[in-house]
Amino acid sequence: MKFLLNTATAVALALPGLAAAETVTAGDLQITDARIFETAPTAKAGGGYATITNPGDSADALIDVAADFPKVELHESYEEDGVMKMQHIERLEIPAGGNAELAPGGYHVMFMGLSEPFEQGDEIPVTLSFEKAGDVEVIFHVVERKAEH
Image (tube, rainbow, N blue to C red; front, side, top):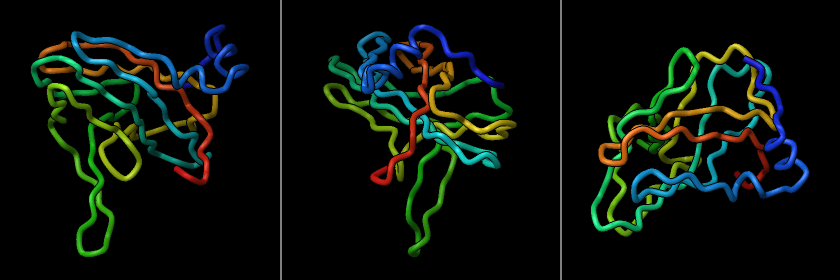
């Protein structure tokens, strides 16, 4: 499951912040800052994050995610009785004129059954399926986990 560095990745690594500036459009939706934090060598799961902005006049919803891993799901993290928990969700609403954040501690793409860790510089193709905008492939860039995340 190693991913080869291509020219775009080499440029992104040479110019920090470039990968985060990439925008993918699907219908009215704009997907930015698609990233996964590098994982420990023994990790069996990792989370994917992005911002989905909807400047359009009608709401949409993220209804499925797919990638080349044994299991990929849309999840939400939440606190219950002082304990952080996570659960699979069927859809994530993206309001008209608003956005949806896939971020640590909240909604995220969960990649499960990793056979190798996510390493900084890897690029993971993910298909996001939207109710109205349809399917769109987004490259999630594996980035260094910093203390503030």
